[in-house]
Length: 587
Image 1 (cartoon, rainbow, N blue to C red):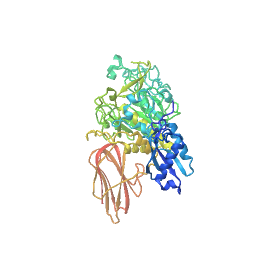
Image 2: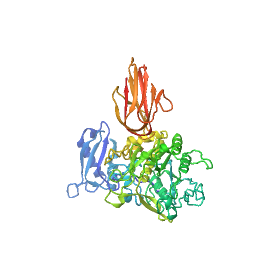
Image 3: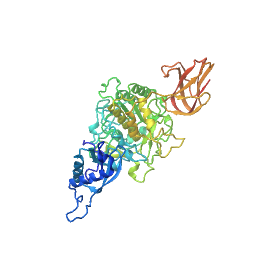
Image 4: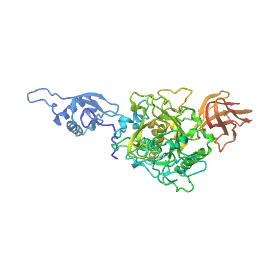
């Protein structure tokens, strides 16, 4: 991979017409702009710059310096009557600097905004999702801060095919598909694995096509998707290699973890894969030598995570190990609360937007959605290429035949944009001497830095905090992450409209005066299911608190008789996604 060439350039190759010179205190030129002009013109003549000298026949010089202004730092700006080429500029500056009264002299460099533009063949042509000012994620500016170096992102998907635009960023993964066509009495499942064996260390994708023999169970006949390779390329395709496309975090590593085959993948396999990829122990499987800091699950199924406790338990384990879990919201134009793992606690659920910045027609929505990212949109953009997310794939219809680029749309494509941004964030945080961000900190930063939707989604289909902003999130990761702050409550004044995903936590506080006989902390209204945790003079958690209320639904209350004067904290936790809940303190 070649070195990155930043867009910011000086004018040096073509010369300059504006120069800055600062004279020392006490010099004549420091006090007189006329002296500055005279000395600049003298330097031009001494440098023998053509046109600066009077000709032998007495013709007037055609090149001269004019004083423009004195700058705030006390330096003077002068401008030539024509642009000096590079050689002339250097000669002029050399003469200026030879004067002992000159503190410094330099060109008045032209600077541009900093953004890293990789030289990948199709970057500018196809990857609108990185750069488009309306629908993109502002990736090029983020790359000035981080490119994801040192971070591993596990992609739990169909595995990967060999691809020159991806191979250099692959670390060993694992194939977790346990069902490979064994004969059973029920005969329910086809040959999910398709590779003739069960779990092993080969995470290559042999193809996930479906044919007539599988259609009765899969519900469809289709070619192979190369879905895992496509997702992996969005996360970390090799960048700046004069070929193909670039990943969001193109110096990060991808760990392919195969969990999807013909007709999909089993929850039990996916749960084991979540545990293994995040550094946990799975019986019969070697420990992961390069556990990931980020997991991407561009997969899902119908039914709430409340009804999928195995997946929730696996995710809880990953989060407890400090691993951030990113999941796709789903493509059913439905509330994500009805899908798993999109509605699981603690995950970052990603909806899809198009090049116009509006909700993709297919994207799931709701309080479970943390934020959105480009997922393509078959109804937006005047150019057909604008409707797709392009990434790495294979040209084979069923089995691998050779590398290619594939255009897809879906929340499966939105999710890896966010996973890649998290890799940028973690790499930037460590490079700045900060601790690795916790999953909760990552989620808060992504929400806090998301940019507003150019086309606001309808209130009935919320899409999270906004569109992911790679540059803002990456920069925020380099700063000190402040302590959790509580939103103050006012006595007897309801705070309405509280909304969050399953596992989200909101913190409030109330100052209680001396002599108060009763304090009532409550939540009510809206939809979903929340619990309340209360503590006096310290911030409560679900594990450590003074009192709690955890009934089904949102009608919760904690009543304290004769409360001590001081600060009471109230933490509201989403047991399931919740919308438009009101919080109130009464004393």
